Image (cartoon, rainbow, N blue to C red; front, side, top):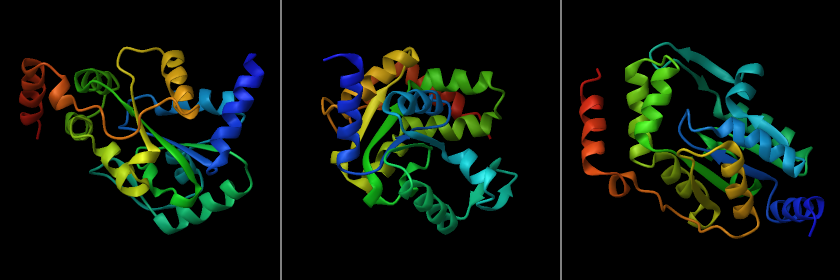
Length: 210
């Protein structure tokens, strides 16, 4: 099967059970880079949900302490429905991807990353340590995976470890999932995977952040 035929087959499979593929994960894991490339391969519309909310004013206020917008969920869902209905396939990337109505979602890809690498990446971005701590803790506790499974069921949720991988490598893993070659559910548990001494250091640093 040539590249175009293979991509067409994957696109058809992605469309068969819904209109939306959700790419979620903690901030800093690489959702937008992967989602853009995925949308190109599948000839789909890409929606960066954070940008979508801000550009359309779908928020109630800006929370200075959390350094984020408080979204108006009803308006966000209403606007998303309008856009999704106009397209055959949409890739939505967001750390709160569970907001997408279940009837539109064909599958959810949760991008995971080593908490130590995530810490270093967010610190390099200049994030406040308290905000870094919040997101590293979320990654340690698999919050995005748990939220996705609660919203869509285990069978629709697939995890991909992005640690140390290029965008092309992660993209290929996501495409294999779309072809039906992935294993669903919560499979990446850093508390069991990571070396105890490494985790102790992360936890120690987190405990020192106010």
